Length: 510
Length: 98
Image (tube, rainbow over all chains, first blue to last red; front, top):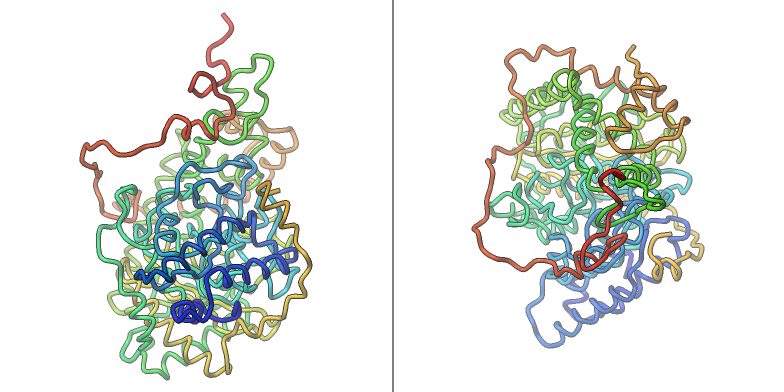
């Protein structure tokens, strides 16, 4: 059952062929068997998950009306607050912290009866593209355990790709849902900025952050998208409008007459050969299904990476000031009459990892007087130009496409000492965040040179998220029939090695 | 080639309230030239007359109606505190010893 889609699981649950407790236990068993190798989870909440599953089963038995995903398990990125469950954002500075409240995403999942298995690993405060910046060690790609599952939501992508969970939640500030989805051969969507509440999402860069769904199919991802989206009074940037009809679009999956724009700047040089080949092949497939392919020019995208690595660190240097050792989280050096300022500095040294420090310092520099206009100010203007490029492109195309990431999954350790090389992996995903629009990555096949998954990215205007699913479902159906099955079924079987779960579920992340 | 000296990094670390070892200061200083060169590309574009975007949505400040809502109890709010005293957060001394 764990190898089925979430849609099939939901169907089996509604027919009472299986109970949510059984389904949840099957996934907990899978986690116990393979997470010693994959290390997708920071905390497994076996007790909480089984209790939630039992409650869903009882509701169903009593004849209550159930949500579409009721009883289906899910893995939650550790960036989202869950009441009473350790929440660290991958940082030592929050080790052992148990939020006194639920984030809106978690509240909506609980309302929908979705069973939360545990919290997944991530780059510290979502800063990174490989999970190697986690304060608790990296996560490993189930396709090849020597490689990264991408990041920052690498724990979530690895959990779904290794069948530890059929669904997961991630967050995407510069590509942190789409890039790990691409590197692990699954589907990931960054919804329109403001479509999913940020209340209880630990902030990295507030004008870019957005939580979103992972699944193994486009329809599964749509069902989760619909469950978490919607207006929330707790988030002042939440869009007060109807949720786009993403599930209906995923079921329709028709691209006849759709205009698909290929972004000139996001392909070719710098993109791995196998990535480019799979991308072009998918485009041809879309054309054969009746879509009209056009090329669009987005000249400002060349500067998107530079603008992002000013805006995001600037916002993070301000957001992370809240980790001050006073009200929650780590406190060190509070002895011998040390001043609050000294305790703060010692705690932030001990609690933050090197990438977080690097970005805070970069942001502090970019915002300091004398440099503000040249760096942060210019970056904000580039952001305007990128929005204008998109507006022009969407005037001639319904959706835009590109490869999700320039390469397939790289080796753990390969780029860790070269921050710029790591940042370059976000080149195709970052423009979406800067413009606040939505994007999807779905598997386009394996690169010939390394047999690793390649992601195909689809972008749509703000609050037109249904177009992602419309085009994604069409491409997925065509590719799946060509391959004779979903790409994920071609992933090598995990050998399984007992994990250290019993201690983890008691003491939180170690 | 941009540079940021060890002392400049130390000053920024002080502003950001992060204590750093000598090794961290030197490492960051050596990496910053490359990173600053990369981000300084935003200055290559003619931005004359371009408006800045601070936020992707055209929204103004939003205020909710002034209605009392449920909030955390003192015990909940203090549940993660590193130190507490008399239902308050206990913090290290803020003023000097005079």
